Image 1: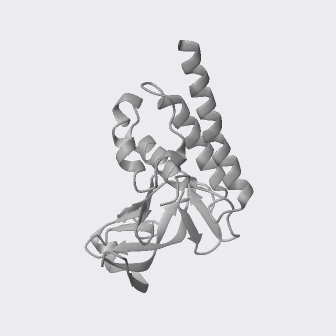
Image 2 (image 1 turned 120 degrees about the vertical axis):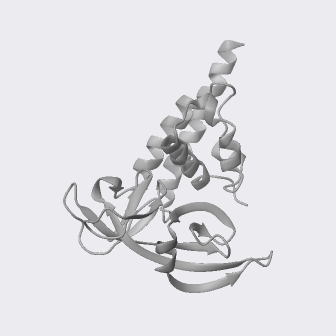
Length: 211
């Protein structure tokens, strides 16, 4: 039985790994960056200014950001812009799309007041969503040019830490909106700290089953 379980876990891990390779091969928007685009490799503080200490939000791992200017040297801050969708009544959270609860950024009240609204839409439930854009600054050490680097790290963490109680779930077993709730029940047994949980959650959502 132990040997059979081991084969199940290894097989599931191989399936999970294949999603990373497949995403890169497909050339999805998250798989390859434009010349002025980078990706956050962890939970990344968003600063109000290039040198100040005021943090106005945080950016989730694997989020695409547009560089506002040339990349800075190591240890400096890059000016970046993030755009996504906020639901009315939850303006401090910016998601990837209307009705898709993949969190790109969480923002302070001050940051919300500085957003630029691009357009508004109403979903099938009557909720009003705003397409917003926000600029700020992040440490250059948090950015990588290829999101596959982020997903590879997340997949390794997921496959090694989330098999204590059961065989590994394939990312497509749940939808992007379901994964945060599923993972919350696994965090304690997997001994994931908040940053690790955020990374794994974002990876699973990016490779989840379609709605």
